[in-house]
Image 1 (cartoon, helix red, strand yellow):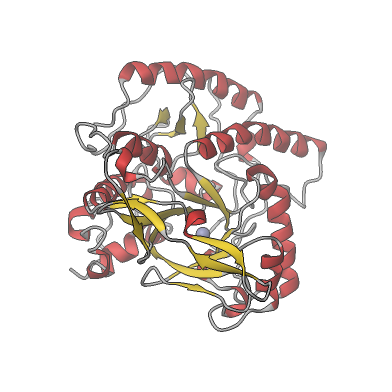
Image 2 (cartoon, rainbow, N blue to C red):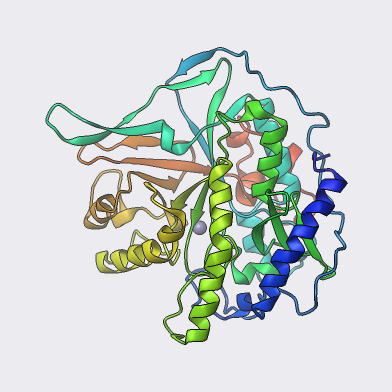
Length: 418
Ligand SMILES: [Zn+2]
């Protein structure tokens, strides 16, 4: 089982009540319909963050698969050796906490099946990665900027120093926004800080009971996993959280709404910002780091340069202002700036570069990376740990895990290649 003891859990719940009370005082601020983002988001309105009734201290035991039974000591004595090979990169979305809600036969089921893993699958994937001797590294540490002989700034690949036998792995997590359209479908509602100072997820179980947990969300699950397996992380590094802005961040509705300039809306937004900031800080303290995923989850391959600039500015104002500087841009839909950043450096790419972005990540069939020679930037691809590859790319992902061992039987019967 995860190491979280019951006593600790109850202590945490007491703290949540204070936080939840504050949230409730805002009168269901999360239910405010924001501007709907592009893509898969239907109109908001059913996503009230706080239920009407006063929360009661009844922690619901959550069903989670077992992690490694006993914590293993860190291999602190392992000598560090130079590593210049491939740095693997896997990404996830928010994990499905309650598959019975995500896979209920409605119109959203196929999308959740395609893009997400369940909590059960996620825990098994982490265990497999650990057993295959991967070690988490920070994407910011893999490349660095230098000045070449001509005085130009360029990027270079760093030699990593890893414990002998370990293979470097970047984990990134896209859209950790707890989008309003997802909330009724078996996902957590937000990340919060418990009374014990640790990150928990808050949400509702299928019966509508409030649940504060470290076992139902990808972020706290990785926190606990690294706590129990310190040698899974280089220096305590966790993952990269890629944030959009159109539904706020981390479950807090920090976005502006161009259709609602009322003081009431702004007051609620400012209150959400007050709640979000300590969560951001706690994540940073505990090895997480952030990337832009654009404000509106936009298609950067086909958007006009002016559209790209406006979206980027809004992201900086509403998200960058909360998380601080980042040089990481993770392309929504995997769509590359200007349609192609591999063979050309277009106007939109140069604009993002001017904002300080240096690493630009798409999606692909391998952990590809290329250092651009005409500008100080790196482009790379990430592999996607999700239902699509569990069903149809088992072979390619065997270096990480075997889909046959990981696949959650609660998924719908949509076929698979193995
Ligand atoms: Zn995304």
